[in-house]
Length: 153
Image (cartoon, rainbow, N blue to C red; front, side):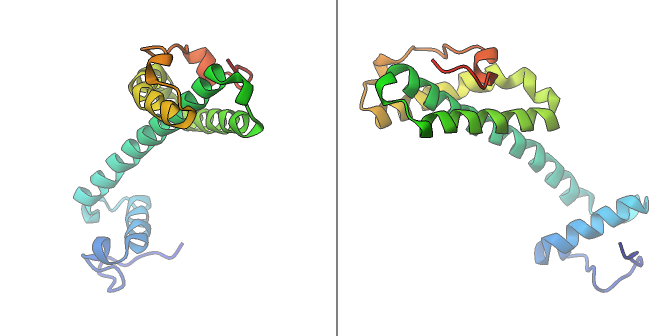
């Protein structure tokens, strides 16, 4: 990577607003060069926090889709399809990848699943035509069941 001079005109102070990719490359270069005093700390901190929130949001979203399809499989077994099974597999492999990259998120899987469950029930009701009261009031699936690629209710 090309070294960046301290007052390089191609890296203006407002690069964060004007060219995010250029700003990221510049911040990485400053970090590699250990030129910490030149970092755009406020924006860098915000972006690091955003990455953490993004991972957590993706995990919640994938758990919601997983729960939705587990409910559909359990409560409409005659309609169980390759598409539903494929979605179960896809969500589980994506969840596994998230947890592999950020093992600390493994401990919040059940919490996030419990938080996502009411929305998954509502979606399951819409998609199946079954009343929400058909489904358990609380998440019935354990962490092991959620993550087991072979578990299909």
